[in-house]
Length: 515
Image 1 (cartoon, helix red, strand yellow):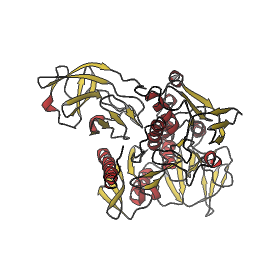
Image 2 (tube, rainbow, N blue to C red):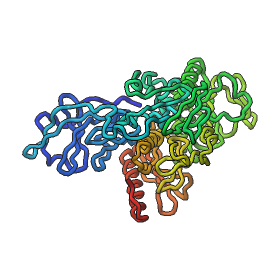
Image 3 (tube, rainbow, N blue to C red):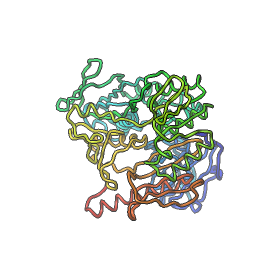
Image 4 (cartoon, rainbow, N blue to C red):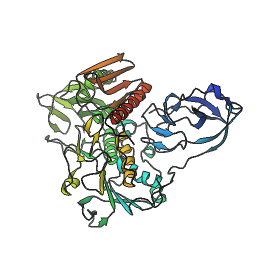
């Protein structure tokens, strides 16, 4: 991910700017005292905030304004223009400037930083204690949101991964490629959780007793909580292949996995990636960036065939091939010390093997507790499980969506947003989770954004050049199920907004009301 320029842009705002120069609902960029500022007019109000997304520095001037919010074109983070408060995947708020409108001229006043956790409003509300099982995207987002909402009770995150929470999507991208240092990987600075009274317990949870709301840890310790959030995520699949236990055969799910992969890559020349899904293809691009020869072995003819179709998958394959990656269609029969044996009997030399054939949901705790499960942990619209005091979020949660029906997603942004939503509902908001699923992938400098959900589709419609900028719509009948875009970030944001409006219309027709 390239570092955005910090050079100030647009007009100098020191002397103010005419209100007439700010079209309602359209972002405008200016600068003040060497810093770029985003200006947005909303009716008779004008907001002034930082102009760079706090996730990966996306240009909010190219974003989408909806009411008093602005969305980042890169990865769909959303910010309140009033408070600067972020929603996933952004972690930090935007700085704000005081605004004074005099005689049709907009003047900017004092700049202030919004608090990272702007605790407001709900002090004393909610249960006395919340136990969060899992410190990944959903779990950490939930813990932070509880504090942001002003919750004063005990918050405990329990996870066996000593390094969590960290930026998991970066593991297969810039960090593995060697272009992101490890200090970028933790989501929060050292001391953050202690300062915000979020307890971090490094342990596994072996048992959940629903009636008693009690957890038994692998250390033998027991903990009871008034409310519990399950955010256990998934683990990497390890297929039954001879030689899978060899030291140069690795998976990529955790930071420790990635450290091992980097250490092995440093002493290797030739890598085989088994699997052509997102982790496999991002891993292939990153290992190629490290100078390794890379062969991808997969039964699919093109990458992402089942998720994005042959057109987008074909574009990705051609891009990888142009960067020196070789594809072999087929299955792996076995792995030897210096080569991978395919089912057709041929061999591919390998000093390193990355197994990336999917993830297995970690639902054992929920199943053992007697919660309703079925390709995930079944939750209602508020992310509550079949036990009233237990919620679930992230990869394991299967929720009822107003547009796509029963839905489950294994993507970072969805997990973060569900963690935020679950935390607020634990505090009594009781609002349905209706965010539109979104994910992105980046390989060899190409970013693909995907909004919506299309497990199956009848046809696709393509606007633009598949080898250039384009939008691909996945349709069933006349209904758009999902949109994949390349080089059309604003179009992706507009598609997200269209899906939101679709849910609102459906709710109005059914006599309900989206919160």
